Image 1 (tube, rainbow, N blue to C red):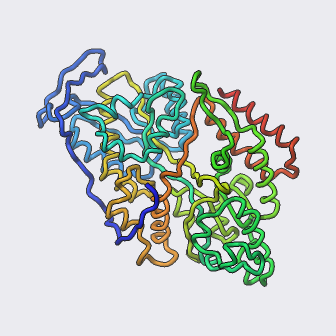
Image 2 (image 1 turned 120 degrees about the vertical axis):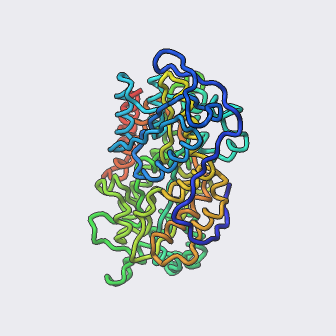
Image 3 (image 1 turned 45 degrees about the horizontal axis):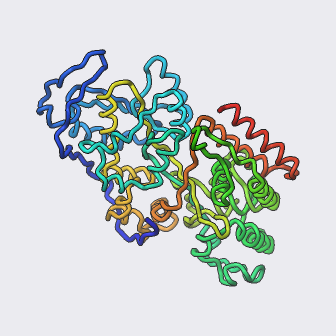
Length: 498
């Protein structure tokens, strides 16, 4: 699924949720909750019409602020499997807090059946022998996905769920996003820098196509120097780049760890991998290629071309962007509302990439893991609930109402999504307009997504990658001795967690 032509009308405020019953008859299913096998219970509808014949309760732990959407899906699932009670539990705190809470509940059997999780978290659940292998559910001829349904799930999302130290699928997509480059369209589109550097865009004014295909080399070696020179030539009242905040630069990138990992992927330098024989993780980012890139980015930071959240004192860089203290802002497509400005139009484009190489963008946003309670009835009910949430109608509704990326290829081709992603008729500088641009962008990048392998210690590898990026940007002297020492220290810190 590459780029698509998206044209449409406003989307309806509320969509009906699907409630399609299974097309095949269920097989018997026993539970071991009380240590004994039980037969089906009496319900108002014959139990043989449902896969789950006994009263079964499952819990879904998440941190989402979309209770209405989740409760709607629970209600429609009740029509499909009336013997299943789904308890939606919104936990406070971060995704990492959710993982810690889940792990702390293992000894007392106080943990969910379905939990929102990043791959690093799922690797921890695997280490505790709690993550359920999902392939037998996915491929079951009665209650699994058909071949057509499975093929409809974005391939890179399925691949993420299989990037673990052991073979099999251990997570499935839920709230996916990636990164995009948001830029000040009013300033940049049509900006003529020919008098400063006639090689930029072949001497023509900046265009959306040029900005959508930036390389890091073009950005740092040509565009940023020309923008700074042009801005310096303007009277104070006419400057295109403000400097009234403590931190300012031409280009801002919010996530230090995503940047480090994405650079390693884009340039083909090693980051981490899993040993195919032992299944153990390997830390590979202590290499000359990454160190060379750190020197380049350090130079860009010193010249005022580039800044990140870490190098800006920990503040989200979109705040600098909306105040016009940067002209570009790379951030999550799931947080598009934070990139909107009421004073200038914002466009959405691909992040810069390595010259002559594939334009990779990171696959991010949480998936869900299924946790083992030694109760097949609960495990099957959990799978059936996820399958219901991920069907064509519910997955589309979730994407439209939350802003997360659709998890199905077919979602992008629906009239509703095409309408959602159409910019025509949407108010200038509005969030509605920027959301449409964002939706159009994400529909073009699913084949460019990449995932990193996860294993015990990969979460700490990400932490160390982010810290390294920040240190290398802000270092007064980013020479070989500094880089060798800091990279070695970072790898040692990861190894302590493995």
